[in-house]
Length: 407
Image 1 (cartoon, rainbow, N blue to C red):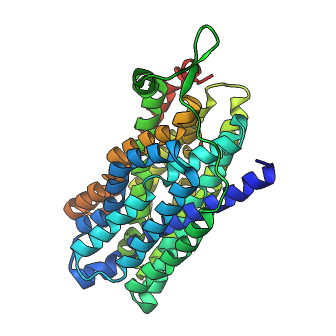
Image 2 (image 1 turned 90 degrees about the horizontal axis):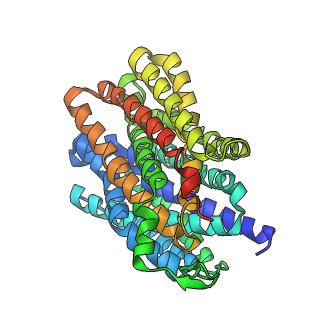
Image 3 (image 1 turned 60 degrees about the vertical axis):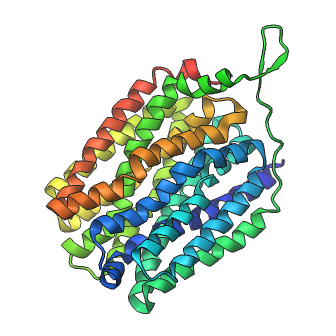
């Protein structure tokens, strides 16, 4: 595939990921409207976010096997169509249980998208640029989240919350149809070189050892989950935080939160660029860099939610909007660096399972329950500890990266 074709695939994947997160996160700006219409609690609002991640957690592994062993393009196209139609269905729900079910189906559709997209980009771009490309691609996450939250709050405030779901659902369906016709790459055979130089088929024990005996992946994936707990908590609860403590209407609160989240458009590509640049001098920089960025994020979170209010707090949260996602491209690249090329989608799927099991699925509910018990301002003061622990795990993993690197 030519460089021009590779970039066409990149931009289609970018747009799909952007609408993926618009569909996923639009609900958080609708919380006050849903509470009024359905009489639900903060914890139940959190469940509407967690429902997506629980479905991803359950379906991600089988979906990634389908991606790796069947077709990247067809799998992604089908999954994008499912999540778009499920988002549209949310607009027609009447009860919490119906809305929860529709949100869960969104997660079924999204389960294999990130593994499939990551595997395609890892194949179409060289290894030395991998973190940089993945950083640019992951910039679509904060862009989609910010657009979903900002537009969702605006549309719900002026036209009703049901229209917000419909607005973000339809573009993804169009892109899903377009992606079906994208050129795929040949499925990679699961083989290894024997001492004689001949290619032999990987045994099941060889496949499992790729993940169970890989200390780099263990540290990387656990740290990823801790950092995702932080970012998901902020994505879910910042609009409500500004609504309650700054006295803003929900459309203004959603826009204020979006202005912070959208700065991750800088943070994700910057993190990938700095990681790849540092890697020219330090081979394990793909773990050292996110270790540093995680600690910096923890310090900023501690300052913002413990000591500050108003404009000063807003300024520090701006910095967090950049630093909190700087870990993503490096840590995603690590999931590709230390496994067989034929297992790349499965490797990221394992990462997704862990990050959602311990991070994304827990964060909205845990912070919601803490908010119900102590207040949302107190609940957010727990976040720095997660970022600090992520930094420690990434630093520990950096000592194993060279030995685990797949050659």
